[in-house]
Length: 418
Image (cartoon, rainbow, N blue to C red; front, side):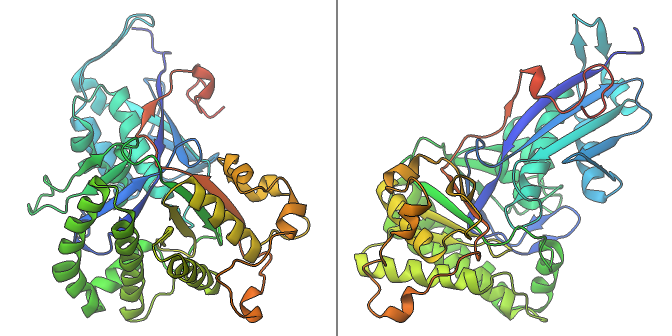
């Protein structure tokens, strides 16, 4: 066979946000968690990783580019994913190019990987989850791996724990498993993205900077020093998981919201209970919580659930479009854009919700009256500039292969970034 060929696959994988949190590992190298977790997959149209993987006999070594910059693949997590996928590779034949790769050839062949996130990396928006899920999914397609998504999730898990949950759409459960080798620590889909399609999600990107304490080191310190974490993993989460599965199955928003908010708050309480304490939320995060709590209480039943991962960004899940429109009105009242920013770049993603909220431009934002649940004027203070931007989205589907060559991130002739 000619030695100039390049075979490529491109995949797109969503990110996910946990509603019952994963925090703490019982095995650092295999990334095995101390408790089950449940997440919602976000619509990849608004938040996703696109990854192109290529193989060629001309490649001298495995190489990777993230958002256009070359990064090292020497880290243990990349190595685990590459090793596990290569072990499961099958024969691949491309008749058009006259290429046949035997199972045993994969050990000798090198791959090029290019990955692009359409959202900030390492800012608490689960970019590593989407990234490792996409890497594993794309490589599995390239190498003709026969394993199903749940089995692939056990490989993605070794890149980034929450990545295992990004191999499915809808609501996903990561089962902690009991086995020491991690073979039963896998993700399963609870329901697909159509099951509860009333839900609408608004993310307040409070800061898109990298965080001070990485999740990896934060978790390790919590496991070593937080008594609350031990209690949470043993006593609290198992009961919450059962209640959450029930709430999702029955579309019970009241129960869903109560569990989601409580679990987010307990996760951040564990961070505070860690020695030294970890602060992922900031004043803006706390303000958003109190506005949502106030509104929910005034309505008599929850309209919105909030959840925060290891960072200050608020993920707000509204019970339906009407509640989402009212939520956006409130958020834009309290956190208007700075004067030099237009509404179009301040609210991104599914902008149709702006029309529902009657917000066509900045004049409409300026004209918003204080929410009715505010009794005293002091609470009507505004904080322009505290939120970088809002992303409007909804539950979405799992990973897909992109067949359009124009969407590939690597050049089909050279296997180098376009």
